[in-house]
Structure formats: structure tokens, C-alpha cells
Amino acid sequence: MIYTDERKLQLEKRIAEIKRQMIEDGELVPTEQDLDNMDEGKIKQEAEEAIRGSFIEGTSHLLNKRIKDGSADRLQKIVRICIFLAAAVAIVFVLKRWGINIF
Image: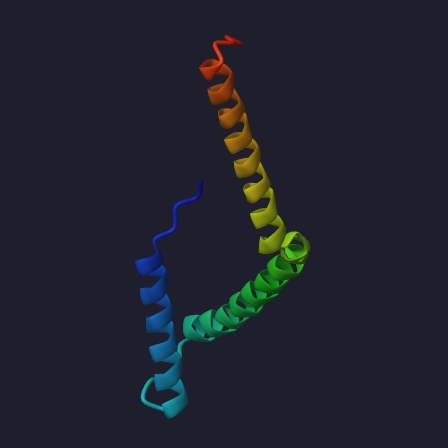
């Protein structure tokens, strides 16, 4: 498991966004490192978007399966199981009343 500090990442993104905005507004003179970081930030953002899209595309088969199964089919299965269990309990109860031991 890889540990990432979400608060630290959000803070870094916020600082980078504020620096970028100040550079665009002319309030801050960009350094060489700032320019590199801006380019790197754009590359990271594009990569994140590509990864996010591929993950969604890769899990679409799960959504299709869920739609096919449907909640109505699951409900029918659960009702059938409950009816079967109730019938089994009733049969055991009747047999015990008649004095027939099956266990």
C-alpha cells in the first residue's frame, strides 16, 4: 500500500495554482524552475485525466453485468430462498408434531 498525504497534495496544488495565477497577472516574475513546474503540472494533469478515463473504460463491463442482473432478479432469488426455508421449517415442525424424528 502506498501512502499519500492528500492534504499535502492539495496544498501543493493550491500553491502551484496561486503561483501560476500570479505569473499570469504579472505580479510575480517566473523563475526557470517555475516554468518547468508549470509544464510538469500540465503533463501530470493530462496523465491523470488519461488514467481516470481508462479506469472508467476498464470497468464498464461491471456496470453492464449489474444492469443485466438487475435488482428484480436478486429480489426473486431472495424470495425463493425465504419460501424454501419457511417450507423446510414447516415440514420439520409437522414431522416433530407427529413424533417422527429425522435428526
